[in-house]
Image (cartoon, rainbow, N blue to C red):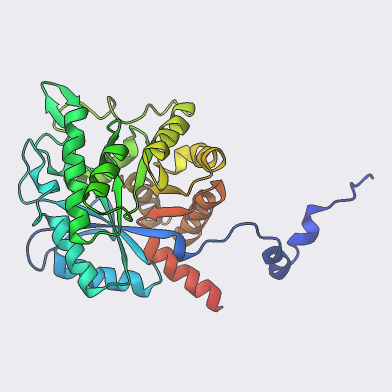
Length: 328
Ligand code: PBG
């Protein structure tokens, strides 16, 4: 019988050999943990469709973030649930807005933690769209001013990174120039450059209380059928000043993660979104999958595709499991 000279199984014989030729490794340094801040005192509302995820009032948010940091996850990204929503998304750029207050509290209590904020209007708009609405249209250019105001107000509150997720055209440029004008030239922008109109955001909209009251987001988020356009979106954002580009969701779009990495050579973030998390949690609860193995394989897959940064609700668990593995 003929055998080729190369037998790939030779280097798979032992864990030591396998680890010598291992091409990718997961490390909590890559993780960003999403958190939801809500007004009130002593609030800790579980999100039904996302077991393990809560809406936290600021005191609990700080405690949770401390635990996150102790596990080795050094960054969080904040979302806010405002007290009131209106047609101008005032809560998004209110100096006393929920994310502004949460940012100040976190930076005061945990100065080493990197605090990022999602910059969008949907959580703060009564109609739940990511921009200003006129009739049934979501207007682009007037929305830019509000987004820029939100970014500047978060900068004043001490945020470490702003992450625009609204998908309006030109928002990275608008935010960059507003930040620069206010002297925040060193504040990085992580742009949700390549964000699809996805059914996988369902559980998040429960958590952030931000489903659109009418229609859907397909006039601004991307068509899941397109990949060249996803690369183009990233290139445009880089030209406008993005420091990091992002693919969202992660799993159905691993090809985009790979393309953004190879075609932009910029840092790439991937958002392992709420629906992806909910599916794993639901199957694990029923005993249908091994949660730890599935989560670590999933995150490794996202990394292998080319992501430098992985935003994931699994971050705490994954960091704990990775620490256990490295100590055995
Ligand atoms: C805000 C925003 C959304 C997510 C992140 N930022 C929701 C949306 O676009 O509808 C989704 C995150 C997730 O599903 O985990 N626009």
